[in-house]
Length: 396
Image (tube, rainbow, N blue to C red; front, side, top):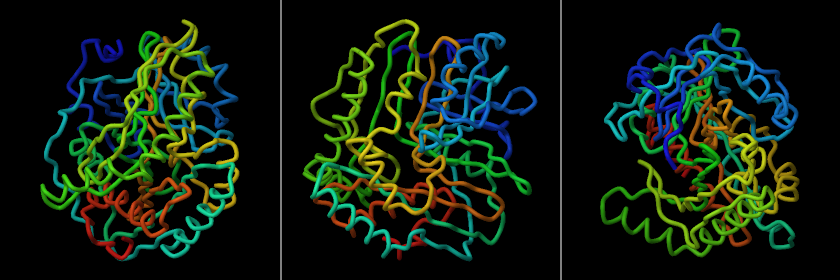
């Protein structure tokens, strides 16, 4: 798929936009296609805090009435009826892609407190309950989330944290979203490897992930971990359920779709994933990326399969609301183009506090301890950026 026209205009290097970011700014987003910064709340209008379903009929109208080049950007939550956090940006700054990979030092944080919510033991217990329920049917997969709440000795340098995430995870989708806060600036920051949906001129692509294993500490071990993930029947089954759900959703919208028969391996600095690149075409010119977003979200990668009974089971097992975690973060324009990543590998940061998020897909043959270890491995993306790698080994 060709690059979106927004990124084809004469524009500045992405590194310049990254250097202009300051904590509290509404939005920063970097993808392999380009970079977007909304630096000033005065140049954008916050959209009503309603659900995406409620807002969708009016979003196109707002864009059509906006100046040329305007876009809607921000995040939608995991819960489909929860309020979005979106802005209508009248003068967004688009830039070229950041360098694919670039060295950037993590922060040098010193932690004085951490707490897992739920605890490691309670998370394993929830996985066991989910597994028992899945064996009874009709649900075949659920996804359970976990938080890691941290207090550091000094305030987190949010600009430096974003810079490290942006430069060290060049193949992914890096973001900073300003959150409402009374005291110090608060942001949701992350480096997601998962593309929920991107659309340009009626063509779309996605890169859904399901099946994860930590990278090895040296070359031989890393190669063994990759092959272990490829050979895992549990992870292949989990991935197949996700693809089945996505295929059904796209078929329901009438899309022409190309989906490979088997997944491939993709790496991040800390993890191996099973991924399936999906491409296709929308069935009608009046449809765009927001229609695909509403159709797909939440995919079985974060919400289970089949969707409705899986979500009902997750409601019974998860006691803390997810908010924006496992939602979607990105942007769209008046022509229906845009990019939206799944909001994972992320943390909410304010002052000296950070809440990290991770989840694991559970199927009928899941091992609770293995799923706990998977969440611990996923925390390492943000722990590493904060300079706390290995510090929470008790979570593994």
